[in-house]
Image (tube, rainbow, N blue to C red):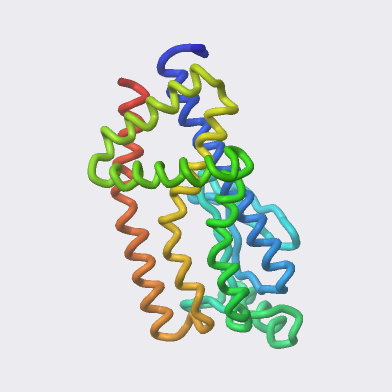
Length: 241
């Protein structure tokens, strides 16, 4: 089953992947906001995507900045790891609500709550993969995809081309819905790169040890950027080859 043209078909494969990623990021953000609301956790910031902010919308009582590129989402709990200059007074106002007992700071969460906060990304990805692919097939395919990601660090171009060609074949034989469902395992496999969330296991994120963990997590994230850029270039080459 061919849709329009070879290039259009390949662009459709990438569009399905981006839509899957955006949906996952939105569901993860909602899960985090639900957790914050249920535990009365004070939030400094919440955003969906990266890049310039397009608009702001209130979700579950929290103002969320919606950005240009929908892949990625985050929430920042109070107090900040690195206190900056509070030019708007919003941080001070939030601190006052925490002091009054209306809200809770992250340092007031117990170990079980911090574990839930840290693992929500993986839990949401696992739930989506299990619903879309089944309780056995979702984790199995995610494990296989993790191997693909690891191989892609060494050979991004050949690995990306093979993975995308397999997705294109699925699109032609089984359609859009099946291709989108298969991509949920990829989302689960990519959660290995959320190890920087482990910094949130510490109660006092302003301590020296916590700050060192934050720097290590930031370094890990920076190291993944060249790999991501090579995969992006490989995708462009694959589309227009």
